[in-house]
Length: 510
Image 1: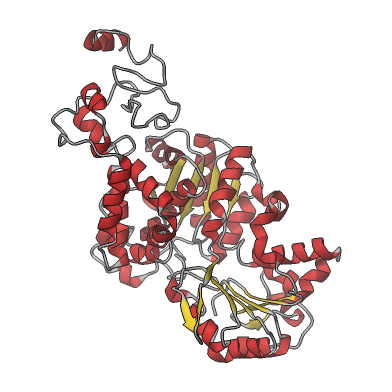
Image 2 (image 1 turned 90 degrees about the vertical axis):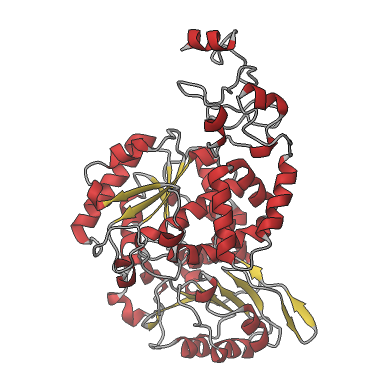
């Protein structure tokens, strides 16, 4: 290999040269991506040097018209590109202008995904420099529609697909992925995508979108991120009858078959990538999500921001109240009330409750609906994470506003169509007194001559940094730590003053 390169280049091979720059092409970077700048040669190599036409088809190293004159000669690109050299900044300006011409958010999403597939560096530059504008495009709410139509817009696989047909071969499949130094995996089985339900194999859009944010917001290298979809079938009849559906056309596997398949997957992940790889369970249905977290929380580096953001919010509020008041957490929990599909969670229901709800079952007469619960408890805050839209009705919000000067309303369910209420409704129904935050973004609202800018409290502001921190510290069991203790600013919403009573909806759908 070395002698061949020396003969071709009439000099030392890339293996002999300073990794910072190689005149003959190629960079010596452990990740194969980190040394690329406009003044530095970028040809990747493993056992051979990629150059010319092949290099331009490699999204991780392609720079498009930003290749300099020197790079075009070194990497055999002369004549394969127009003669002009355009900086990445000008490319960014051009692309943002193009994206802004689209009126349909899904078209913007498709344009961004196409960019990622041809020029990864430019994709992340756009996303990082224009995060406020592009976050709703590559993540919620647009990613929800993208998942619903994933079969129709699918062009190129962006992660690993593991189906029931691959039982017994999962380790082999993971080894087919070209990158070896994986640090973060986001995996879904597609059964509960956002608030949209069972989207089966088409749920891949969520791991792809989340990992883009791990890089753009958390600084995790894209080459160390791996999106995975576990395809165990779907119970969505519409998808099963859709000729463009890209997944298994069968009903979902359940019970022992499902458990054994997931166990093979988790074992293969640890075997192939080591015990420090972070696995984020994403959009699993509750009946599987809690079991998976409990089963692998002590053996793997795992977390689930869906279910841990449900009762997890309540627990963080209780912990912070305990910390600030020196009152035992068992007592501070009594100031937080949950409502599920059967009504207020109270002590008389304790025997029939799932284990994670039992700490929140307080002494109170049964209440069957949210409106009556609000009237009875008189909370200062209403926090929705049910995934079921339009649950904060006018009557409920007006009741909340009747005994609070500044009612706190957090409609956190995604996407926008599943939000418990809109920003406009929250401000109008409270006469502009609400402190409002939502999971998906809402436009500013004008009420009574004042302009209100809705806050956004999406977990996208948490999990990229949390993931990066876990990767950096090499932890092996995040569930044994309390995120608030590790980083107090992670639970800023639990530090709100004058919040003696909090109402929180559970993750159960009404």
